[in-house]
Image 1 (cartoon, rainbow, N blue to C red):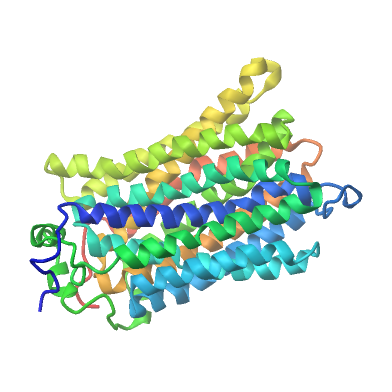
Image 2: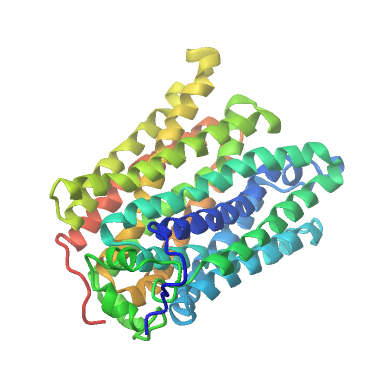
Length: 454
């Protein structure tokens, strides 16, 4: 029996309330993740005699790489679990676990191995956010709106980075040297628990949501097989190993492998780049990073709207998606100019602004790319498998992320006396990865072919 009742007020656009909940969970996810970047110079890489840990760039890369590796590995399991226990419980448990681990990070001392252990556990919790969120979008939005909804919630990754860019330096300034880094972990980790209340109050699947009108329920299922699938709920069983037999899955995996690490690089290494390239202090880094992530929000939302515009003009969904992704893949080429414009001897005081502008375009393009890449999963796979495919793809992205993190750490140590060279090489990687990914994905899946036999 339909759970919607005539006695319960129905909302015409309730799906956007769900999207807002996903936006805030992603915001907390990336805020907690980003804390470590703003502690790098202030705590981890200053001499131990000054109160810090005295780690090298390579040791910092070990920390972020272990986080990335565990994040990648656990999404394999987490996506599978969420497809079975459902999005409501799956996302809630993920946020609770990563928030607790974030708080515990304040009490592990100075040993690198201690931070690696707790940061790896933290990654296990964080791994659930995107598989659960992408599955939720597939459940709550018609195909034509999924890239836009994904772009909106995915912009929470930028919002979280922006909040961290403002809040963490302020926390460090507000407390003494030995307490500031601990409070940064505690306050950011604890803030996510407020979201849990709203999630349990407002979220259910469309079939179970009593606030959802019949008209909106029908609209959500207007252009896919979802109405029939939804009748079985969001907990369905299938052969997980069969996913590896589909070219569509490998196209998504490769796209994530090639491009996820670029965003990890922007998150973990942008503050370090600004400090070394332009000799900015920790407090000065706050605003440039805030700007980069702020512009990326625009990229995420606008990138998600491009396919919708093309679809309204009559273009088929898959063609609209791949066309949008090709156009987006061209934008990161501007990152190749970062070190040219970042040359202080050539552009003086304007160099930092020009370099930040190039990075902003690249970061915004990544978010636009990511919104469409995630949506390809729900375009091609049935809802019952969306979290699993997303989880496996995120694992592939995490492997790419580990490679990028280790490359950045190794290059910045090798070119310690010339960090400009290290970052020039990294920006070349950032610029070209998307076009390579698009070409291989298009080769694997030249035409739209949804999976119907899973």
